[in-house]
Length: 129
Image 1 (cartoon, rainbow, N blue to C red):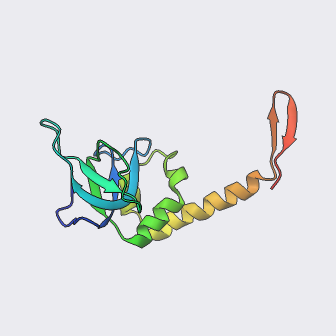
Image 2 (cartoon, rainbow, N blue to C red):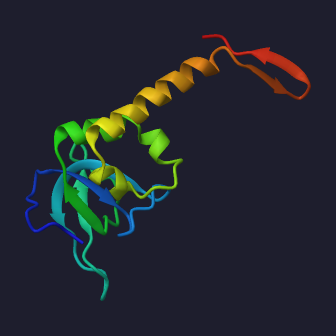
């Protein structure tokens, strides 16, 4: 599924499957066009990084043009997104403030983890900051 307004070079978010499951491959990069069709399946879209190398050899089924501000916000919380039960497309529609708030929460959680005591195999180890 592609937005007809996407042109080669546009900044996009892309997902391996149309549902945008955050546990499947997804990326933010630059649109590089439609790849050859795979049989009767939907077309696959090529997305590349700054170096011009494709993120996924088989392409992505769904892409959408996004702003650099939204892309930066999503990338700042990418590790959290991959562990939450929300579609990547939820974050594309979310308010940027809400995405950034998730980033603030992550930062607080990371700082608090530095003072936790972790117990492994009966030995207590304090995690240093």
